[in-house]
Amino acid sequence: MGTVSALKSRPIAPPSTPGSAPPRRAPRAGGPGRKRRRAGWLMVAPALLHAALWIGLPVVASVALAFTKYDVLSAPQFIGLDNFREMLDDAVFRKSIWNTVVYTFFTVPVGMLLGLLLAMALHTGLKARGIFRTAVFLPQVTATVAIALVWLWIYNPGNGLFNSVLSIFGIHGPAWLLSTSWSMPSVILVGIWQGIGMKMLIYLAALQSLPKELYEAASVDGASRVRQFFSLTLPLLKPATFFVLITSMINAFQSFDQIYVLTDGGPANSTTMMTFEIYKSAFREFRVGYACAQSLVLFALLLAFTLVNRRMMGGTRGHS
Image 1 (spheres, rainbow, N blue to C red):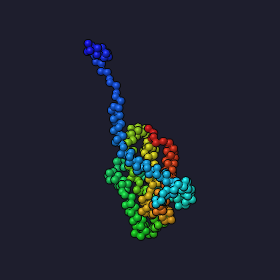
Image 2: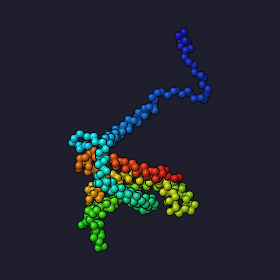
Image 3: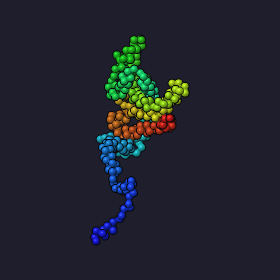
Image 4: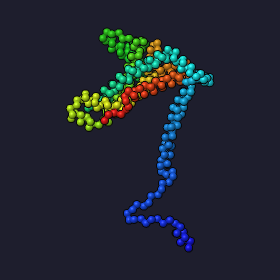
């Protein structure tokens, strides 16, 4: 009797027709999807912790210290906007902003143009392409201090390479890094030369991913190489161009190593950049609060230039 009552109380499943799939079971709460999400968070946890400690925390501290008077030895003292008011009257910092803008204005577009031309040359059937790619990209992976030391010898007014070549033609070369007229062009030349490799590599990767069918169709329609370049290549390279532009501007605004080795900001602050002036305020004058305020101005300028460039380029999608 107990067995019969138990069978009566159990729900009877509908009869299954031949060939029909068995009924699906409802997914358990916290099944495989939850386990995968948990495993994903565990895998990215070290990177998130590293970013929080070494990026997030310093950024928050810099913003907080920008409104204080802090010299490392004593406790921070809140002074409001006094650091930013002082920057308005700081002629050296204003000069560093101008120098940074000039340096960026010349190094970024010239470097992008040369990088694109080199990428197009290496994208064609050029012989020994691997050797040329390595030679162009080598300065990018070489330590900036080592590069600056080589250029110190090149710019040496006594027995440097430039003046030695000029002396062959009877020209007395200037003291490149000691002249207020030639120091900035000399630093700009080093910046262009060192940054071409990465720009070339990005453009080369973008060129290799362009659809060949469009160029074949354009050739059938009678479009010349020049017309294909301006009507197809440049529009299709728009995302790569935007990426190269933004990263190049950030690198130019953060230029420090070569300035430190080549000129130390001189002569007469003619090559002082914003990053070098921030370094001087923080580690030579021990005005950490003022240096943090200068860093916020640098960040604001980079953000403004990025937004303006994005608006001018009208987005980052290339035309198909």
